[in-house]
Image 1: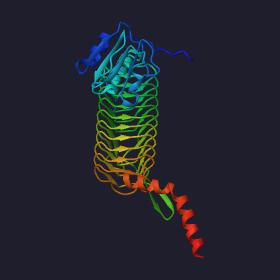
Image 2: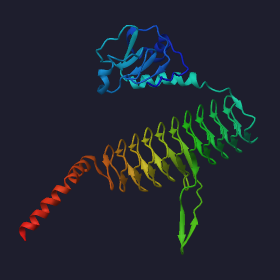
Image 3: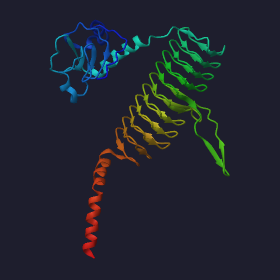
Image 4: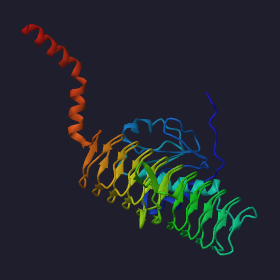
Length: 350
């Protein structure tokens, strides 16, 4: 058996009680120092595990973890030297714990500007911000309190980055774009590259200058190597709390509503508007100038070529309502059978 690798962390049960607060009912206790996080079937003494999917409830009884986060209606009992934390959302509880672990493993950096960074004298950098090595900050940029620019970040002219945002290595933020408070932009992403716009006259593609910006509202997270194009004019906007996965392409003048979630490899063409809390599955593609209503769900690999109503669930290319797509999928599996029956009927009629 491969030896389990331990994280270099230590959390006592009392510290975890503080992290989880009064949202938890406790059963049992443990004297163990909590040293890692593991799945129910892999956890050892000293680990934290959690039960979010009832499918795995049977694994709790044999789980060796010292602390298990379980749903508030879970009726099992902890073993000796084991604690249960009963709560409404165990997965969210684990997120709070992992946040504390992350702070132990990667403590906040000391404020300041690394000597290898290049900062324009006309830029404004908060005294509590941290600017890493090889960053470039151009004239007129404003870096807010508590912002952390990791290495090799390029911040263009007039860019504004709000308080406590984290910009990971090799991110480029083009001129005049705006990033709100508490945003996270992961490595290799490009915010504000030119929108793909050309006027074709007599066989020649003439570039249409893109003079708008990108605006990320507060609490937005952008995955690695995602690209968001600046507007031709006005704003490409990502609404508050939206979460965008790796390798997503968002074209010029797109509007993403607050709380929406876009999974990896989604592509959205220009001027399409998504409402609030829209979910778009991986590799889905949306044509331009469409409107997707609040709370709509678009399945993986869908091809969307017309507007979608609020609350609708769609799949397929071109997209269909989810239940209709499912019925067609069932019928497709029977096509060989139908073909044989049709062939038999044709032969019988000859």
